[in-house]
Image (cartoon, rainbow, N blue to C red):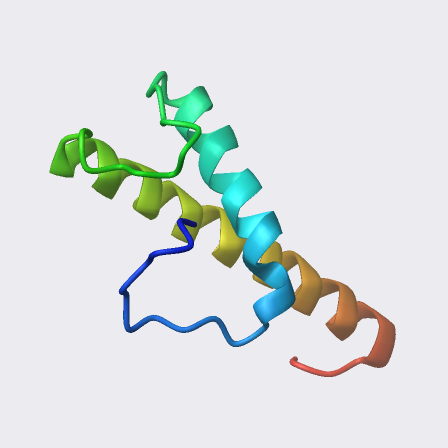
Length: 79
């Protein structure tokens, strides 16, 4: 995410910033969207930015579900 991001969505884990940036570029590439390497997405349409954000959310939810399923299998919790 761009360093000059004025978003109120602060990261809970600041160290995740690089991984989220990488995910953003990977998802944009998968969707066929040319995301600028400087991180400025102002030239993209709201549809394109929304698509990238939506797919990031879907992927993060999938990762969290997999981790919870793994924890539940190991500890017998969450049943």
